[in-house]
Amino acid sequence: MEASDILIGVVGKTNVGKSTFFSAATELGVAIENRPFTTIDPNIGIGYVRKKCVHVKLGLSRCDASNSVCLEGDRMIPVKMMDVAGLVPGAHRGRGLGNKFLDDLRKADVLLLVVDASGSTDPEGNPVKPGTYDPVDEVRQMLQEIDEWMYGIISKDWERFARHVDTGGVVDVPGAIAERMSGLGIRKAHVIKALEASGLADKPLSTWSSDDLRRFTHELRKAAKPIVIVANKVDLPGAEEGVKRLREELGEYPVVPASAAAEAALRRAARAGVIRYKPGDPDFEVVDESKLNRKAKALLEAIRERVLSKWGSTGVQQAINKAVLEVLGMIAVYPVEDPNKYTDKQGRVLPDVLLVPRGTTARELAYRIHTDLGKTFLYAINAVTKQRVGESYVLHDDDVIKIVAAAARR
Ligand SMILES: Nc1nc2c(ncn2[C@@H]2O[C@H](COP(=O)(O)OP(=O)(O)O)[C@@H](O)[C@H]2O)c(=O)[nH]1
Ligand SMILES: [Mg+2]
Image (cartoon, rainbow, N blue to C red; front, side, top):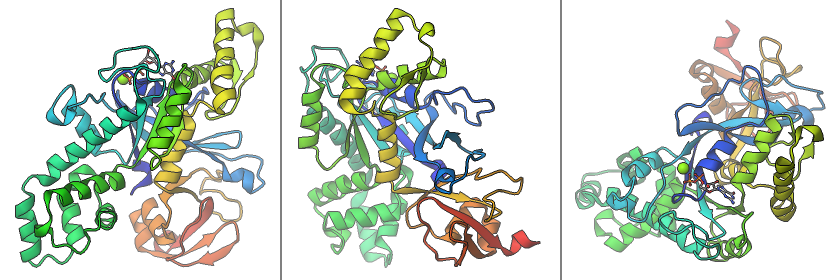
């Protein structure tokens, strides 16, 4: 996976807070000149993973973050986010914006499934009394919708495909399945994982029952579209019960309690210079009381009381970090030219950080930076230990790496 192409899909039914989450996440909360990132498309934007900047670890006083932003030692690393159209039950049969929803989903690497943990939004998105609706049912419905959609695609012409694989001398079965499903963002590694998880790795495809195919599809969805549940609206009454139920009943998925509305308000206030607050912080600090009117002050106090003190944070940053760093298993790597000064050719300190999948090698990193650098790779230098490492060196989180390549010497 190209880390710069990581796409987080924000999904869920109508009125649960997807757009609020999306706009909070794509607002950095600080005014920065020459910000290199803008909204790509009305529903695609840039969100950020927050990670301690390696300049702090290295004992440097600062860095010159260029492809990302360093907020006093916290590196905000851009990732693409998509505010997906609301999902209504029956979307796979074309209800609501069904097909638009499912089309958007194809491109996503990981999903933030936003639900109303307070149970105050009915299946069609209408507001109801908190606690009326069960967020666990809501998640199950969403997952079923996605499974149905995938099953519809995979089962089309399956028999013919299965016969062809079994009798046509296809050697790489997972590869053939992945190729058939590549339009859904499915890769061979996902297929291998799903074959194993569904116990179908050794069963010839043409002998699969339709139950087998459903089980396989379910596992494939879990592998290719992993999910973090965002239990939103925790500022409302009834949310505690909702979060508890989500955790009890859907233990296989991470559940992050959140208040997207609170995060949106905090980032706006931080941007206006009223408070000091970095996305994901457990608290904020009022900078200038005189800038706050009574209403704004009451709102901030309510956020502190109902969200931050109670839940530890608004959850928005935590959900993004969980999706990218834990679920997708990305690590941060800082390529440099000068391994002693940690600078690039222009003398900028640690300008770039890349998110790469855990397990990426030095040579793969070189390819990521530039094809020529990959092709002519000679060795790399771990700038922290000053050790020379070979092409198969497996990168660690927060590695600072200089690539030495034949092309670069010319
Ligand atoms: N109380 C509360 N309301 C929220 C929160 N997030 C969103 N909302 C409200 O829920 C409604 C629907 O939000 P929106 O983001 O448009 O939902 P979407 O249809 O899923 O995109 C709006 O009135 C929001 O202000 C939250 O964390 N807490
Ligand atoms: Mg919306």
